[in-house]
Image (cartoon, rainbow, N blue to C red):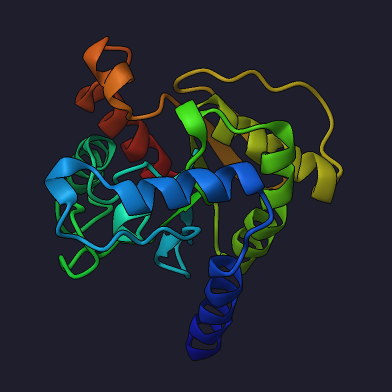
Length: 226
């Protein structure tokens, strides 16, 4: 475990120095300097965001990208925004986290048998990354995902995260075929189970596309498979 922690720390340091995508760098720097009015007294993280959780975990949750005033501000994936509030309430109810909130780096949050990461490590304008930006970030996705040796289940939050996982296994493991995204879809791929799940964004929550019952049920389904 000690060696794995050292490997992850080394990976994270390398990730934090990435400036490969000019559009994303300019956007995240602008957010970090201008800030949101309610966070004016805070120092924004303003760098790429690494994954978080149990490196020996069997469940991997994949999101899209850091939120502008969530992870881009706090430095931890799904932390300090409305998506985080919804997601961690569901994870707590599913028994996959020790608390129902994810507010800041020192809030005591711990994940149980679960690791959360992202398809893209910097916030994109309008939450819409380009193909080139996703391709640039795929090397970090590959390196981090390969560190989670015990993974048995992947839960992809949203279509971009789902497509990123499918592309990963097509490129690196010779996966063939067509895989359609939808909430609750389940595929058996390369010894893993991959679930599609609607993203816990305020837009999806407010339109009732996703609710706590649906997401908690999906996480419990994932938990049963480990």
